[in-house]
Length: 166
Image 1 (cartoon, helix red, strand yellow):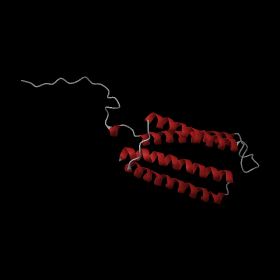
Image 2 (cartoon, helix red, strand yellow):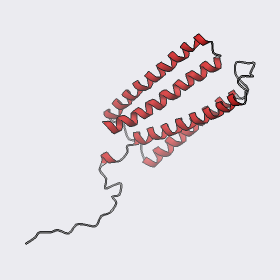
Image 3 (spheres, helix red, strand yellow):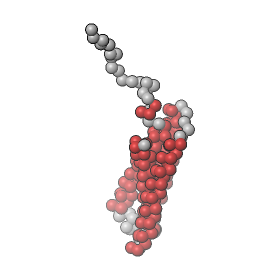
Image 4 (cartoon, rainbow, N blue to C red):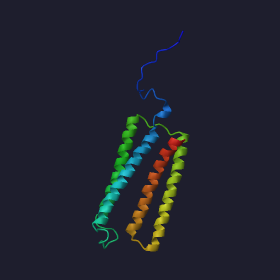
């Protein structure tokens, strides 16, 4: 006599049926959105800056800042503020409420911030080391800006990696 039980038909579980640990947290979603926004805006800035380099605007500039650079910086800053605020608001609205971060989330954020500070320190060291080859203030400013952007990207990526590992 065999005791075979009928198995229920397979179906995709709804988000309510999944265990809580498999669902991405609000903090992870927020980090990924920020990472995407920062990286995209940094690529926008780099592409426009590269265009200024290729057309000779930077080399031909008689002033410390080449023409059109102020507009690029202002546009980039406005993009960062608007995109981050809009995406975080949409994410918070979609979640219904912003849950409090856990002690584990705060610990991961501290570790990630430490990684970001290391990258920022290396960038500051590189900017000051560049004084030996006498760069313009424009070049030094862009080295520091690159360091800030890379430190933010490192911090966000570290949070994602620590979330997956721990």
